[in-house]
Length: 597
Image (cartoon, rainbow, N blue to C red; front, side, top):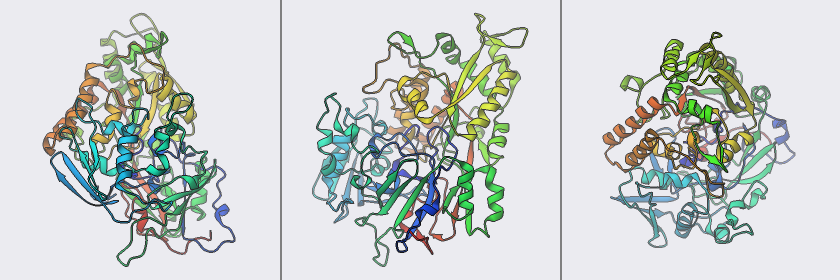
């Protein structure tokens, strides 16, 4: 899911990711006037992203937004409106039970002009994704069954490659077909050679210090330049395979520029002045932009409920490092008490949060599965919900052995005051609203919340390395149509399972980490759901996983915004949806009367 699997199969919605931990769009000294030079007219599209890229290595990426959507492509592509699988680098495919055979297009090339072959596909899976020396969330969604076996990948001939699952695996085609393919000629040595510390060179290959022009890609665009805190520039890939019905090579737009952003007011101002072509519409700005739509020559697209998940989570990890608990044992007992988590869920006024954060332009959320997925279990179908009910919250707490003192403060059975720190990313206005509301709501049931916003890198280190945190306001970019893309978010052994994270490769080991029976059962259901080929039976399996998650609330889901994006009318060919975003079909977009480059 993302956090869960941040990378998203098919790299859809690469313009408008939710940055794992929710961050507000902003702009930092990135004036679009800087993009004008004395050069000739160049067709281009300009917009802004929320932060600097963390890596140019798609396998090691754990963030969104990232640079990979425009520069990589898999064997298949996905229609961003319907979710339908379509030919990509593979012109066709055949499914025969547990076996899939892809036939590659003739004459495929990498952005450096080298041939792209079946050998690259085999290398990508067998030598990179399956390499245990390379920590990647991608591997989590490829594991099959209880044995955690991986699909076998084999070259049949110069154009055909075979994938064989060890047992039934419903999302096999969508999963293997959508993952990025990597260039063997550029990366082979990095996966076979280790540095002095015993780590593969691949782990330090293609970081953001690498000359962008040396990053070899196969998507519609390739990296051209990167200026820290300022911009990322993409240039059309001259060797991209797509051509239109008239034989013209795609994409049509020559250059894409990402301005790196920090200040949301400046970001909005620059869009209104015509400097940016695309902007995610924040609910607080919707009315203003709607009034300016015609005069500003742009259109606001509404894709309905966003695919992302916004949640609050407690650290349930009982593990220790070098004898030191990751979480204060006293607080850990509170957090691991189901009644405590349910009480917090009942004690949160989600509707007021939604109104304050998004001015009502969104929906309350009770599941991590996207509401438009066929596997979503709605409240009407029996999903447990936690409507605002502070009295019920108090009853649950009292029934679980907590008590109140004369000041109305909540204490545990040993007299310890119930108080915890809620972390969020710096700069997120949504987090500010939620944090402020949380303090007020929890105070009404006797709990003190200390809200703290910290920079993204520090927060990421706590979530993925030290595991030393108490409560988290977070978000994911969403799992999309098939729940298996969120497998690593729910699996106890997943590369990103934040509420009870295991130690990863190269990290100090954990002692005493426990997996609760309900947690293990959700993980088992995700395995079973991926194995089941019958659509209706799969639905029932994922519904049961959602029922358990709603009962034990490892993630207290809050709300999700509407997917709103404004795009200049000069950008033609937009087919907008919450699932695909504004630029999923970037290869067929055209920029009319574009700015000077």
